[in-house]
Image (cartoon, rainbow, N blue to C red; front, side):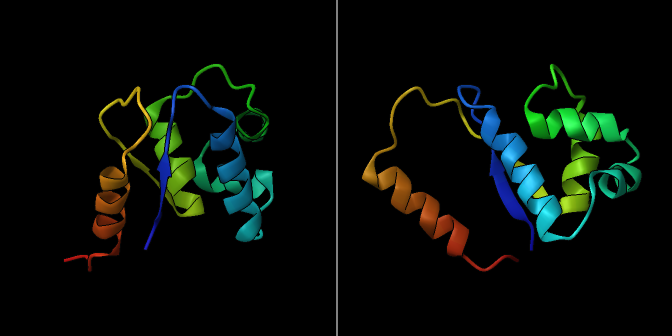
Length: 98
């Protein structure tokens, strides 16, 4: 089972933290992750430092696949979630996968 990663355009630093944490949890160096994802170590370092200006989807997908993370796209929400939103999300995450 893969972890889900939410990307919020207002806070890009958590993304780099999640990738770094997942890499370290797997005991991978930046070089090992880069090799397995077929990207440069400098790209991984910039991604983890939050200084990477852009990253193509395919590269991002390869990096996330190596560290066991995935993307989840949702409708842009400019408001705080309601209790109903949170409960619905929790229920959908706890349902058995087909």
